[in-house]
Length: 276
Image 1 (cartoon, rainbow, N blue to C red):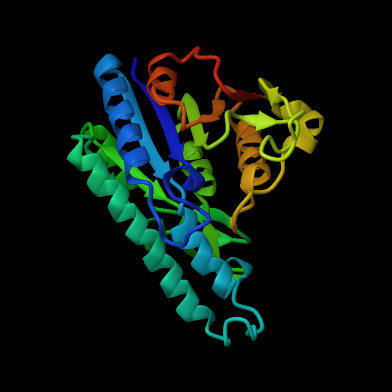
Image 2 (cartoon, rainbow, N blue to C red; image 1 turned 45 degrees about the vertical axis):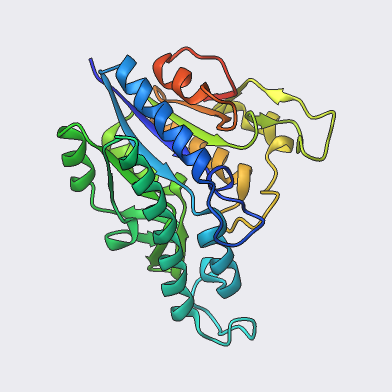
């Protein structure tokens, strides 16, 4: 029986989030090759691939406060919220083009699907998005590639639809068995491992006992308008309440070969597992 797995390549992983619009093509290429090798090992795998916007979309969104919606014009952006919406969407698309081209170059058959073309959000949550293209692409043995994007929001005017928010919506429709979230750190810690030498990796988080992991769920170390690790975990915890058979794994994308191993071996114990 085929196993459907959602894989997110974090924006901090595939870009330098401290430098605006700087991709890490070598990292993207290595990860794409690992996905291809995992598919060679596991022909039964079906994958939905997603990526964050990193220093492409987040920097522009922060500048124009796109994630805060279209309220009172801000002096910081000169009141040009709609222009900021357009610029943020264009920046996210530029990174997606880089990821798409690298994947195709290594013979990973991705098909880019632009979330903002059909997404309708309410207070940052994706309420509607066309699932048909994703389903049809999967049916023909290809890999849908979605990404963090701008979106119209019926309450706020505009928002940022994070890859996690998109995954949550798609997961309720497609029912994947696993979701892998890859970033720069090995998983979820009891503190920020970049600042706290005593921070310890949390091997398992139960959605029903999320409060016990609360202090490890900090924000991002760079500009991230979608909320960093805390947001990622809480999106997944909410999803697990609806899909208790789902398993979510947070792990490092900087460890060569780990993505391939995790995809090929559904029992791989690396990183942090989030379960119902």
